[in-house]
Length: 396
Ligand code: SAH
Image 1 (cartoon, rainbow, N blue to C red):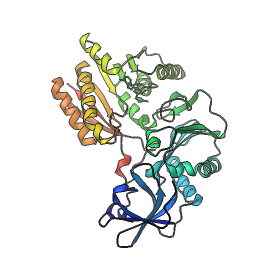
Image 2: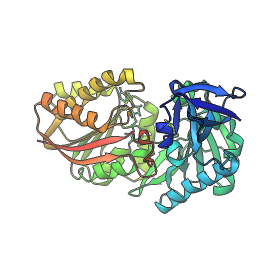
Image 3: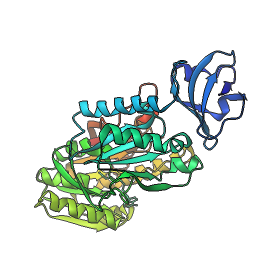
Image 4: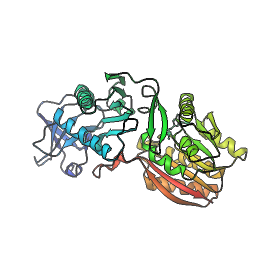
């Protein structure tokens, strides 16, 4: 096995169990140069053994660490133990039910860097995001098939992480049945959603918002709400169930709006919902110019910052939509505003919303802080696993 030797002074994050070794920390390789995805040991400059992980020649993250125990090999048994532990965690949360949906394996946070497994009413959708995971596709499929006996396992390895790893996108059935065009799942709050596992965004749904929709819906009884970046209408459906008077759901994706309409039918929703296929930046301006007003506005945009260099531009984007949303709120209205850019910290996000309130000349209070749902846990040694932050603000 190749040994990755670090530069002097670079061992600290590894000792503190952070699972990434960046190329800049590596002094040299001892032994045969590792193949893509191969197991390597990591040593300090002093020669001390530190950890074991998998090599990647694609991204700047050269080694992803799996164990800090010198006696523990990275083999199928380790993958099985980690997957079983992750599944047990979701079961204990009560989220692994026949008709439910949740994230079963959340990569680094569950001790398996590069592996995402989402559960949708008996189907599994898998993302193999690193060279190491792509190499172990068959073993992972076998473990998942044996431990859960799902109806089918479908691969959706299409993320930008995969591109950084130098891997082409991959998708298709790995085991069992092909998921139908539309799978019905029951989400927290007994809300039914129509999900397209093969072509929907991410693995089909935004599971990380499952509980937050319910927190926002609390404020929607009798309200006129505007759901910006609605995708399949998670926030709209929850608000309607809570008795919203009227909702407008905005997204550029016509197929997302189609799923939203299917979701409304599934939940037998009576609230009138207008679905609008349009750009949120433009529509917010149009509503402002038309002097439209709402009681609740939800902003759940896609990731604006993919790299550190994009953070400044992302900040301006967040501020822009937050100013506009505040201007559209009636006095005492509710703004539920989110950012899923991991590179934008909670502190920075709060500052952006603060700046937006100043520009909009509105006074605002934070009444609740939100984060990703508990099936997306955050390992204390890997705070990067926390990416979703949200503020529910009352805007006077
Ligand atoms: N709120 C959703 C998830 C939103 S994901 C939920 O609870 O499930 C972000 C969505 O923004 C995607 O559906 C994407 O199609 C949409 N989108 C991206 N850019 C947009 C834009 N400029 N205007 C409108 N929608 C946009």
